[in-house]
Image (cartoon, rainbow, N blue to C red; front, side, top):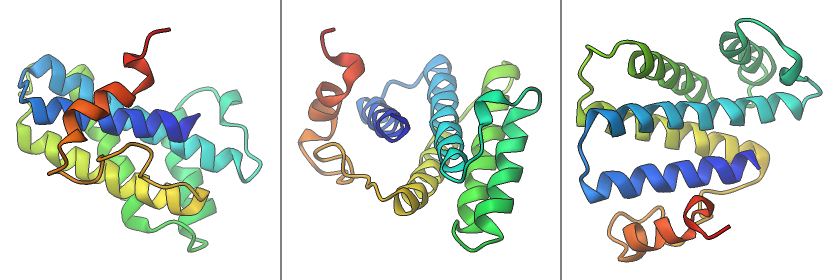
Amino acid sequence: MELNYARETLAVVQALMQLGWRTQWLYRMMLSRLYYAGHHLGRLLLRNVGMNPEQWRGDVHRRVLRELEQRYVITGILNANALDALDRLRRYRIRADYELAFRIRFRALTEALNLFTMYFDECCRILGGDLNGFEGINDPHSPTRVRGVLCQCSIFRAV
């Protein structure tokens, strides 16, 4: 479930960026969704080592980062840069959600997308998944990149 959510988040953000819709509201929404997709991947990794983050109360986001560091980075399973990417996404999300006077630039969104992709790739390596859940998702020149990605996401399918 978390891998699919992350794939769909990545696909929708890439598609919206390709369409060129440049509004602060969309930028804030995309930054937030990228972080939360990463956060849920972190929780999945922690569940895979017997932890139960669903029962944690208070400071859950920082605790996920701390536990990932202890159980994955220090043990050499997760690249430290990937964990740093998740933390940077968290900081972007905080600015997007709480600092409305702060103007988000397209390059910040591009950086966040790159951070998420690096972190997602590391999680997929560990979990045995891949980024290729959608046709054309990794090829910026693919004709299906915008048209196909939106159609392949479950949020755009009829219920």
